[in-house]
Image (cartoon, rainbow, N blue to C red; front, side, top):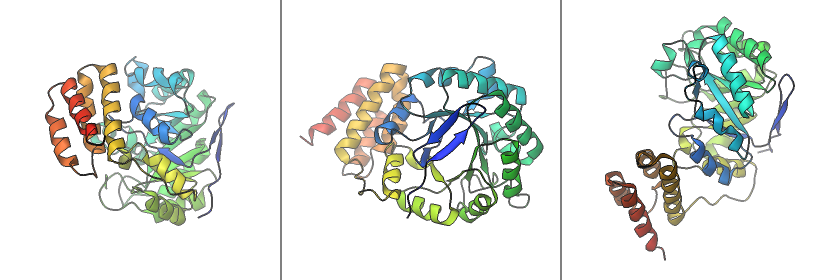
Length: 330
């Protein structure tokens, strides 16, 4: 396939260039600063995101740690906000920009009930005028680019994604990421890449395709169908922080990427565990369990190792298990 061109975005006074066509999706409880550090190891130029930020909570002073850390990032980092109140979104966007955000992204696609029932995330798919108002007012309040993430609609009977996306473009969105499912689908069924293609044909701004992209083959097929300007990787990267870099390398016709072998996965899990313990104390082990469970797969003895790690009662016990596993490779 042909090489993808850099994506150029311009805010009210600050232009941005996306030089990697593969983006890392914000993942609640996953894409914290430590996880992003590992993603950058394989893809230093990719646009990454903090975990999704509740704009109202940030306005009240909660969750500030997600944006305070932005200045420590070594590459482009976006902040994805959610809420339905324009004033709260403006306030949060300004705070994120002042903290060093590369761009602001507004979430209009999260299907989680506790977010949607309060009017945020995918609930805005039912309120196109409010969605446009938020984009218009926030984009005017900041100098960096404003982007939006959407789904195809609330459900199949009411979905009109082209009109919705056109409204966001007119309101000032510089780029739109489209997850190829409706809110009603959640993560069930198959992502509709053909529907993303129709949006791409109808809009002038860049479109990023999202949904069911688990590897380079999926990304290449998705790009052929959608003609999108790039792809966003979500749940497939859990336990595989190298995936963004791998897909970027392989869709750009570079030499075949060699993913981590068993020893590298165990080393990665050990490093991840130690960093979480250093930052979170004993609670770091609880957070690390899911990452170790996702990463320690695809090699002989992985299942047994995962079972032991889940039962580890202390950080030192988990560290010892991984170190003993590494001895087998010496």
